Image 1 (cartoon, rainbow, N blue to C red):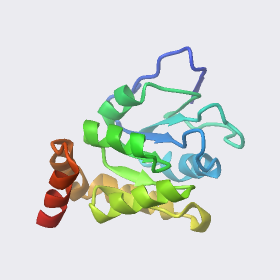
Image 2: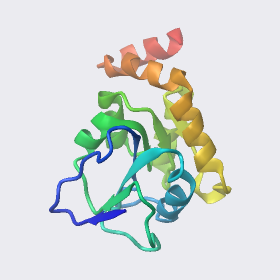
Image 3: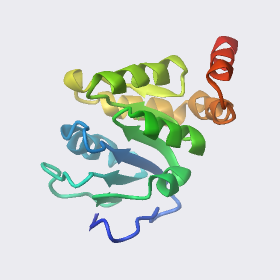
Image 4: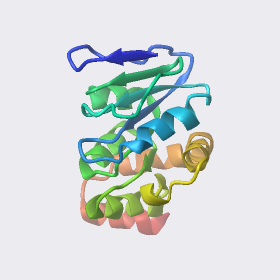
Length: 173
C-alpha cells in the first residue's frame, strides 16, 4: 500500500497483475473510493486511485493499492485493463483514446448522460452511486474485465473522429 503526493510520478508497480485505475475527479462520489478498495483489492489486480486531493474515509490500504492526489491519467490509462470514474466527458475521451473499458459512477446530470452512453455503446457499465449495493462494483468490474466484448469494442470508437461516424458505428453494432 502506497500513498503519494502529487509531486511524485505514479506507475504500474507489478506488471504481472492487471491494472484498475480509479478516480472520482474533483466532483466525484467520495464513498466510491472506500467501496472500490474493499470490493476490488482481492481481484488479483493492482489498483491505482487518484483522489483529486480528497482522501476522506479511505483508511488503511491493502497491498497492491496505490493512492495519489493526482496522476498522469493518459499514462496510467495506457496500462489499465479497467477505468472506474465519475463519467466526465474528458475522462471518456481519454479512455477511448487508450482503448480502456470503463465503469462510470456519475454524480451529476451531465456525467449521468455520458455514463448512459457508455453502457448503450457497450464499452462499459454505469452504476448509480445513490443505489450502490454491496458487491455491485465488484460484479460490474468482473463483468467488464472478463467479458472480452468490452475490450474488443474499444478500438472501434478509438478510430471515430466525428459525431456522424459515431452514429454510424453505433447503428452497425
